[in-house]
Image 1: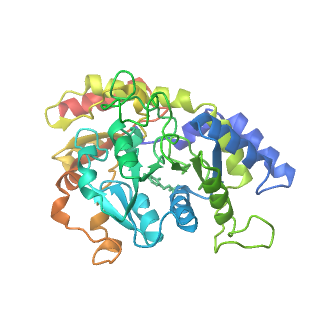
Image 2: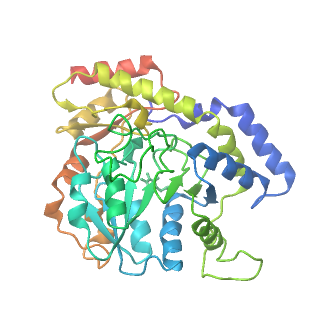
Length: 390
Ligand SMILES: *Cc1c(COP(=O)(O)O)cnc(C)c1O
């Protein structure tokens, strides 16, 4: 059987090093807020290219803390609006509603699956305070024009980088200066990693992500010292000094064992992502079936293929056929956030469903093929041959 993602095999690659790291923590007697956290935070901020990294309990919390910190710092307030793609994983939206902010959903571009930069400005109102881009499926969602829009309307740019650790932004224009060279404030961003482009970014190290821990884990990266300090305080009960509480925070810390495991795996992330790209390239060059729409990749650098999404009108039939032939697939995601029970008839998210034609199409037709750092080209070949015969 070809598994969608073989976590056991992924871990086995670095088994000795991981066991040694875990043993070290077990024997140390120090399990929270210690040297391993500090070390991983330093390594990860260096890797992403930001001044600060704050390890937190999970990716959802990372996003919640960014917005909560902006509220505590007086930059946002309840009822303010945050623009977010309609086809994201629900965590992006939960982070907004959890803070009593209002998600304003914007349709994606069917060719990239990322927020449609041409539909952002019409969604901006006097209450808009931020755009949250989501590098969905591991593909960079940032565009030069999004940077221009943020500056023009004085909006914070928040990145949901849960699916894109290691992804590098490659500008559309050759010099990386945006379409409008005289306006773009984001000159020379080309070559930067996602997670270092906006004002702050949330990262998830859920086991299945490209950089996965052995349980829940997450982080925030930012260049803003005040924001970093506020988030660190919020995630530690609202306290930066023992038994003194500045905010009503929560316990949302990254533990030492997870930090140590992540330090080991981070060293191999670029190599792992390079392998994912090879599998993706193989799929793109070899899948030939008019019933299948492949992702359109302009530049393999700005994609780390957390997910390899295809579109197929007969998705259910295709998925059953692949399952019967021993190939595991998943759907990311079967129900869009605005149609989830939690937001139906809810004051927190008021949208007209008929506005989200592209989002709903993606949710109806998307199928994710197996892809991972341990999948072989031979396995990819089996998948390709099956799909071409479908
Ligand atoms: C996984 C994920 C999250 C949440 O991360 P957790 O660590 O599972 O809380 C947020 N946004 C996106 C896009 C994700 O894929």
